Image 1 (cartoon, rainbow, N blue to C red):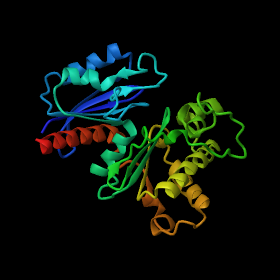
Image 2: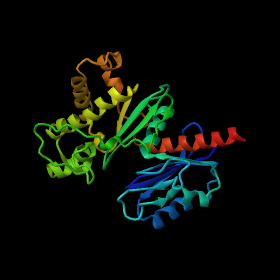
Image 3: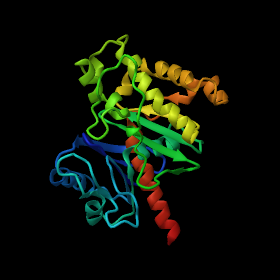
Length: 296
């Protein structure tokens, strides 16, 4: 099979052609510019590829309610030109194939469940910490959408006792994204994260905030595994700091050997690495194709 995959990020678009086994034969990436510049490049890429379905994992917020008149739209994003833009509809006009459509982080968690670190599990959480913070939720064998879709990057946080940074989120100030995303690190310390030494106190503070969101997720959703991706998580020293902080937060309350004895296998890096989002988009496309076939 030839399935198209689109990881529509706020910074760049990644497009690829893969098969039903999660293997890619080709991919391409380019900056996310105005839709009038970006979508023609996407369409041109797939034009002669003979794809049987296409999956899209998109930055958001997006409308994923299939009964909604704005299904497939990017909605309230502040990114110029993309607010209330019919992303899925534009693609459907160019390609008469089944489409899968979800958030970029839901795509990432779906890819990890299908081919990555969460294979065989019925629940998993994927948290990406980069330019923003996003959370994808897979629970009881399916992706979680709810009223809109999970926006766990904007969970409210307790403030670190040594932190006087006001927060960088334009909506909430000191929510998780406002305190822990890449721009917050740079604004607080005057340098990008990759420019800070591994023993800088920034990383314990970063772990403090990320661990709060994980603790909340464990108590609310009880996932079987938590995967941390994104640019900020390219700092390997964060993982042990986060695990330690989560154990401290839970204080023995959740009686599970996965947490109490095997935390290094419970909070992990993506098994698919930087390819989790694109692989998830491929899985969304494959599911859309399977659903079309089963309905015939």
